[in-house]
Length: 285
Ligand code: FE2
Image 1 (cartoon, rainbow, N blue to C red):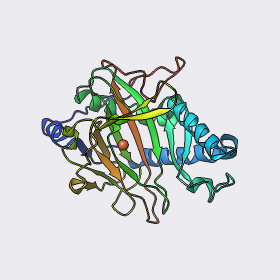
Image 2: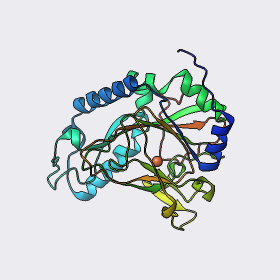
Image 3: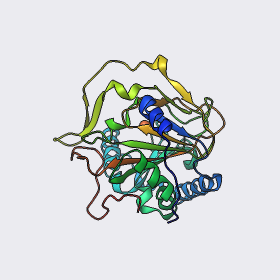
Image 4: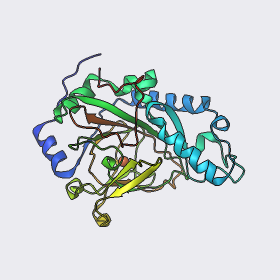
């Protein structure tokens, strides 16, 4: 792996600390973004939705899709836009335009995603945030399809990936230009100082639940749009409230996200995302 000299400057670290996010333009070359997009398309091409979903009843379907999600922490799985299927379990439109995202272990199971996710530059960037034992816990390829790409409501990533103490950092890569029109990220500057509002966890009786610590509404009037060009990396503190609106435009908004935790912190067993012993978490090397 080629080493680079990449370190955040003091004023960048101060800004990240103040805002809870940091925009790094031109972090990834366009060619790498395009390679990842091509690879994602190949994965979708090879994926057979009929083999994964058969509908018995609405309830049975809900249980199955729950299980499909809960087992995806160490797999490459495909998740559809809401309402992608009709009442007979058939896709309403083409498969390529129905997929919302792929997750959650692309970085460990696919060579192209692995190369994109494990670079000397990223390793140094994360080290400069003070993460001593980085572990790449989750990857997602997000399509935000033209016209049908759904809204993601305001949330903190630490709701879904929780460590004690808090260590989650989201790395959000713009694989295409992200604008207000195609549903760019929006965040509340400084919102990471509002505390963790809830946790999504595995329930002892099976399934999942939200544990709510603070039900006060997010100050959505403080949201700012993060319009960025292809190749930009946005760093997101796990406690930062953020969202993206639906994409009603004719342009897609592909993004790749990688979540890193500090192995020095405790990762509770009731986090939804679990790994089998066959695929242990790794850092950047
Ligand atoms: Fe998020």
